[in-house]
Image (cartoon, rainbow, N blue to C red; front, side, top):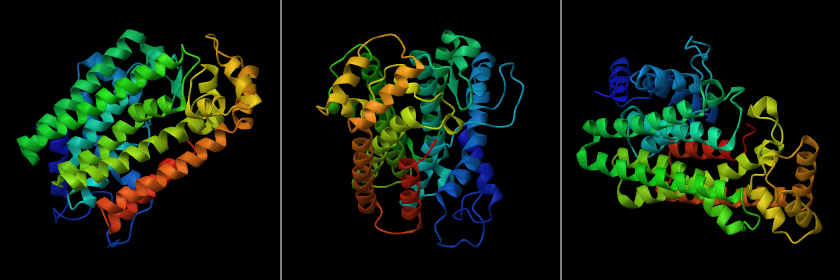
Length: 373
């Protein structure tokens, strides 16, 4: 039995009504939608125990690196007050399953799997980008070394597919195999997006459409996988799964735009990363590429400034941020995010015309699109 399956059984046993609300949902709420913050909290309460159990099954060295990355322990493996991220992606899986009539607890293997894939990508990204801070603490590779951090990411990726495979006892072999294919396709798109992102750092001629394509692969594909996987796991038909996929894809691209804006103007106390971190490494993010493509004098100056290979100094990064705003990159990004969010909502209405869980998914989408960290 997989960790997610055993956690599912424990959660089900704890509730006298197997079809009742997931653990963490306050009794008496009835049909009233939960706030987005409560959705995330309930999701973490359900997912984190299964996630921890899965990671504890890794070889000790890999488990310690992964545990540090998740914020569960320090570099020596000593437990600390739990940190980690918001767990947005597993929340999308669980809510998507509920929205089409399924039980969130039954979708735990899929939710654990996408969180493992997401953190595989973060471990690798931090090494490739040379980032030294994540979630207000040193990145795993700066503590354990680049090679071990990459291997820990590989271990999480392998574990993700194990969770989907072993969770097939709940949904049947055919549906589990289809879920595996959906997850594998998303990982391939994610890797392709990251590869494009890396190649952009060596180029000065990145176009806006190819930058959008990169962002879809790097972020949109996995979020599309989350919502499609939740619906698929709950037994939805192809049309509904497809609409949920579209919802996640548009939300994912909107999320990436918000991330790009935070990478330039985000508050370090909230984001856990230095101010102007993306500009310092000359990353060709969407606001930057939109500004360069604006045809303005500020865009031309930004193009020249971002064309080198050395990291920008503090003053250069601050000047670059001003140029992005002057050239209209910030406004373009905000406007595009609004359009994408509306497209996502339309796809959600197609997949789930009404109901509490549709409202909760919509609330979660708005939070992801307009977050501050």
